[in-house]
Amino acid sequence: MSDVFISYSRKDKAFVEHLYQALKEQGRETWVDWHAIEWTEDWWQAIQRGIEGTNTFVFVLSPNSVESAVCRDEINHAVKHNKRLIPIVYQPVEAQQVHEALGKLNWLFFCDADRFVEMFGELVRSIDMDLEYVKGHTRLLEKAIEWNQQTRNESFLLRGVDLQTAEAWLVKGASKQPQPTQLQGEYISASRAAEIQRQQAEARRQQVFMAGVGMFAFLAFGAAAVAVQQRQVAERRGINAELNAQSLTAINLLESNLGIEALVEGLKAGQKLKSATQEVEPETAMRVVSALRQIVYSVHEQNRLEGHGNTIESVSFSPDGKTIATGSWDNTVKLWNLKGEELKTLKGHRDVVRSVSFSPDGKTIATGSEDATIKLWNLEGKELKTLKGHGSHILCVSFSPDGKTIVTGSGDRTAKLWNLEGKELKTLKGHDVFVASVSFSPDGKTIVTGSGDTTAKLWNLEGKELKTLKGHRSAVKSVNFSPDGKTIATGSEDYTAKLWNLEGKELKTLKGHSGYITSVSFSPDGKTIATGSWDDTVKLWNLEGRN
Image (tube, rainbow, N blue to C red; front, side, top):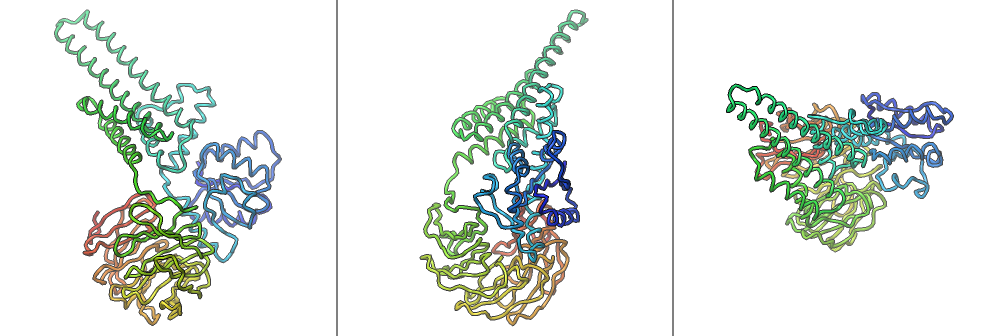
């Protein structure tokens, strides 16, 4: 099993060698075919196995690769097996030439050599996203393919704990990407059916055995008691098998967009669980409850905000909590009410909108984009000002507490202060790479910035660097002050959050996430910290670092 499979044109080999080396330095096992071998059955089978056994399929987009028949065959094989696809752009291409499976995804742009470090960081984050689930996808795919190639021989099926783990993975896959394949579903279903047959056969053997024992038992009562016990064991196994099968069926129905049917099947399993509590194994009961909860939440989902044409990058509530602003890869910002109704669409940016923020009075919205501009808008969707001055894309934007100043962070390694007229007040220079997060202190006198150089920095309003917070081992993606302004929280791609005082002393390290921490925030009373991570969880911590 490899972490990454790179599909590319041999004409772009120099770039891919650079990419391969960077991945190697990050400890990522990468499958690359370096040789322009003639198409043969053995060679193509090796390519197929490489794709099937990888967690992430990276396609290097260029005019050469989109015209390559081999590259297209590789994409088709990856799509066939529902592999996670990540398109990266080495050289500009015409959208209509790109494989449809790649065209609907977000692209990472490596065209600008100066942005390689930043975009490589985005690539690694995408590769590592939900990694345990993706590894499960790869592992089960390889097993299912082997079973299928061996004419679906029963000896290749899952049993015991392996089967339970696979079923739990399949339930989780209903809301995950990449989705389970039909072959994986058939493999797990066949494994469960074989397990039920084995359990039933075992129960029959036990009954025959006990019947034979009964013929020679000295105490008929004792033999009868043992027989009853064995029959109860067989019945208990049967009930657990039926509940597992019903849960799996319900989730499969949900995945097929048959919500009502899934709900009916889930309720049947729930009712059976309720009436047979004493006979059900804890793992089986949890599987039934988990499936039913997932189905209920899906069927009754309300107020989904649908309208953007691409990924939503940033979300912000207005101070009164009545309006939501969303920034998207479709280059627009949308305003919504709490009913999920679209109020306005803010059009004007020419590239991805990476950050949105409301002013403290809720009357103005600031947006930062990869087009290197910041725009100010009113609630009617009218563009008020465009702030220009950064030399690269905008990653973050925030208002001061009094609403008179805006701070922005950029890929050009700087943060900038602006007034509402769009005048640049100060430039904060000191970070080695992009500034990913910015925040004002509650009194508005201090600014904290977090950067891809693994540090956070404190600044005054004159742009003077006050302190550098060192301790993280990877990019700092989120920074925030406590409500009293005495503590700073930072979240990092090293899977930890840290608390610091204003002197730059590290107070606590919050460990527990298994993915990048991209958001960190204090509760209004300052006693609780919330961290959001790529491991699909939010954790709450006290000031002692316990969750």
